[in-house]
Image (cartoon, rainbow, N blue to C red):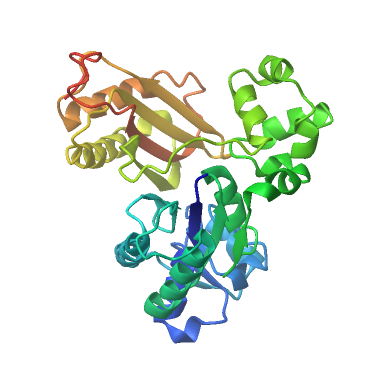
Amino acid sequence: MRKILHIDMDAFYASVEQRDQPALRGRPVIVAWRGPRSVVCAASYEARKFGVRSAMPAARAERLCPEAVFIAPDFSRYRAVSLRAREIFRRHTDCVEPLSLDEAYLDVTENKTGLPSATRVAETIRRQIREELRLTASAGVAPNKFLAKIASDWRKPDGLFVIRPAEVERFLATLAVGKLPGVGRVTETKLARLGIATLGDLRRLEPARLAAQFGRYGGRLYELARGIDESPVEPNRPTQSISAEDTVERDLRLGEMEPLIRRLAEKVWAASRKQRRRARTVVLKLKTSDFKVLTRSQSPRPFPASSGELAELALALRARVGLDPRRLYRLVGVGLSNFRDPEDAGMPGLFG
């Protein structure tokens, strides 16, 4: 039986700002660039009471909470704090899988500090974060990653929740299906039409019916409804994608995007050169003025050998959008995905 922790720093970017600027403590803080094109990177819990959430347009956040203090993000500072948090994690286990700057999975089935239980490890980590970083973190303790992530959100902020193996079935029975990873509005609506609102309801569906309704994801739903998740904590998780995107100050038409696409391609290419693994797929991402997201991708042979060639491929993907050329877009992104090891014998000739 594995012992998995999910540690999630509370309102991380906003909390760092409140820690470093005492005048902000207790006040609604929104980490975002001001302006009509900006989105919220993080919101303090004081701001969340007004309905402000991450990824919300900053203009809307300002309308919801006009008293909020807007702070431009300082990612180099957040990254430095994140590295200190990971140092704390690694005192207890080498099996740490960072998901982002503010959260990570830890496998503490065997811990380095000799603590008698996973709960004690989580308590100790949270105390060390509070004492050394002057921040708070919430933690979930469970037999697998899926349950640990749900548990860490259960008593936020500054909370600890434990799901013991014997409690899994009872805990999941009343859990809303919307809490499952991969279940968005579309899937949740589809499940609702089948009379499925909780995981207890979901358990009543046979695997064959789930497969008929949801394809390959049906099997995953069957497992999660029963608390099954065998995915390991991966301390050296390989790169899956690299991307750069920009929300423009003025909505652009397709024909106006070339300079921005070339700049983004340069950023992505420079970042990709730091990776030993090489990508197979080029991705172009666009967001329309009414927030509809479009992506186009291609796995070319041979793969681009320079930022200029990457830009040309991204521009070619732009021609595949197929919408009214007069349509306006608020965001443009260029990315690389489907990374593989260069020595992968099954992928000859596909790497730069």
